[in-house]
Length: 191
Image 1 (cartoon, rainbow, N blue to C red):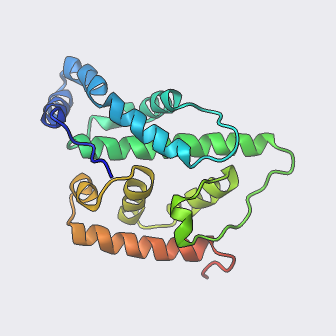
Image 2 (image 1 turned 30 degrees about the vertical axis):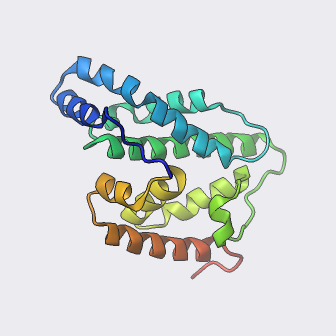
Image 3 (image 1 turned 60 degrees about the vertical axis):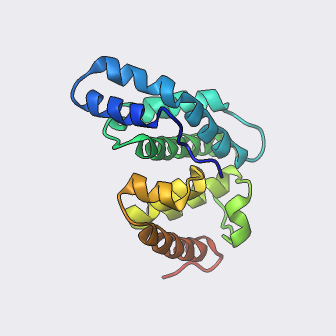
């Protein structure tokens, strides 16, 4: 698994701090430094999308940036910035899936099972919507751990840094979240 760190990492953090202080030039310099990382994230998200693609990686990056742009400047560092971007990309894809389903005749959401193999499987629009609904039921930090690990492909150490918790907490949250998602996405959801 490739980490999203390189020699510009410190520069991004420095620019984020400056941008939060009102430096517009610093804010404008951040995107070019992380653009390749954002495209990698977008391609990772899109690999899971089944059927005909309705959005390309570049478009996903741009739509996600429009969605989270201002809030991204609140990121503590590069990892946190990429975690916010991954979350925004998932939201964009969910919005696109909803649009596609709304356009289909008789399109409805169907129940899916959430086994270990699903973590690497492709998602149909219905499954992506079911996953999004299940993620919405998780505790905030557990949901963010799932987004970072599953959608952004981040390692435990990167997630811990982005969320400001320990790696042990990330492992615990991942195990709890996965157990609940399996239950909620199975044919017999919990009470």
